Image 1: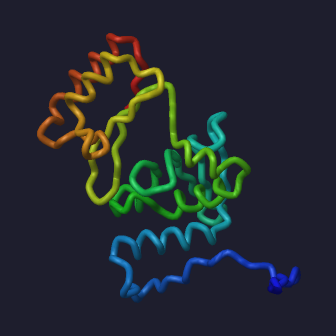
Image 2: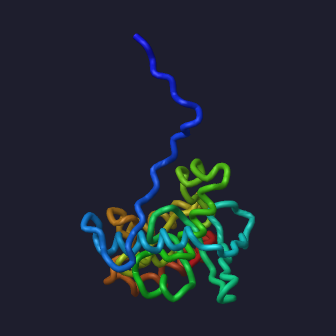
Image 3: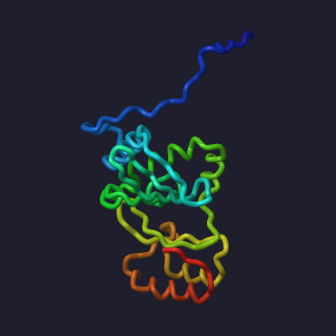
Length: 193
């Protein structure tokens, strides 16, 4: 049995994402996925500047600057998917898509760095705990336990945040958040909001 030899001059290229139309939604995508795809496509084509504002290489805060408009926005990366990241731009604040061109530009740059695949597979694991606003279809408050989270804080969080919904704070319990934050503060554990 003969095996076929691969032609060394015909390097296989990874499948490129199809170019999305800005005016016509593809029939196989929901409107939300189409809009996210457009931001991903446009953001990855930009020549923005990127400055890491902390010492963390991937899960960090960045300044994304546009040399043409001379504007800049703060971007926080917590993962690859929509919702958990943050950008200070107006599009991110109003679209409720959980992404924007600045986030997509930053993710594209980070994904090219050595160690990115392993880092994103491990996920964001800070020592501190975090209350954050997820902007993924509806703005909701979420809790992320840090690696140094004491058992008392974990127990209190389990009673307040819905574990079946990725530790989301139910709307009807929003009034209890201040009490939770006070309790965490008394424990001496760092909680960022």
